[in-house]
Length: 248
Image (tube, rainbow, N blue to C red; front, side):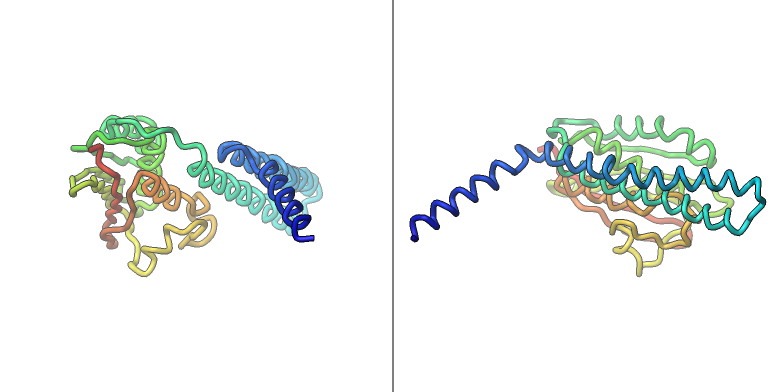
């Protein structure tokens, strides 16, 4: 009897191993398909049907029903953005490129080119100085810079053009990067909360996004052997810092 149970357990374990994905990349592809297709399709259809109904209400002049349909469409679009945020977060764990020697000064300068439309429309400027060469994933580091610059532009003070500075300083086996802005700042009570997914501190719709920018940025720093935190913040600006492992 005992031998039969042992054989049954081994057979069950073999079935589980066969059912497991061959690697993390395949697991991510399966997950991405579920989120983008199996879950994304009904959300997309919900929003499209609501838009069709809204067009009919235009002819009827029923503003109350149109207001309700707008809520459906806005929340559907927000749900899709949240799903994309989850996909981006998951992707960092599964599809990272091998870490090679990269020049973060050049990556940050490329970030400035990519963000030039947002900088121009806001009247902002981005200065970059003394960034090192280290080992990492160039695309992820580019994304990290872009997320922090975008955050600084998004939360600029009313009537004040964004002034953003990226610098770095060596600290033993780490490089400490600083991204300083002159924005509206953040109360210390929220310094931890903003790094949690989907945590928005303002009225819904006041600012674009679903609250995934800073969590993604901190995750990238973590994948490079570092960490991210808010070093200081006041009504006249904030300084975000993150560490990345030195090349040596």
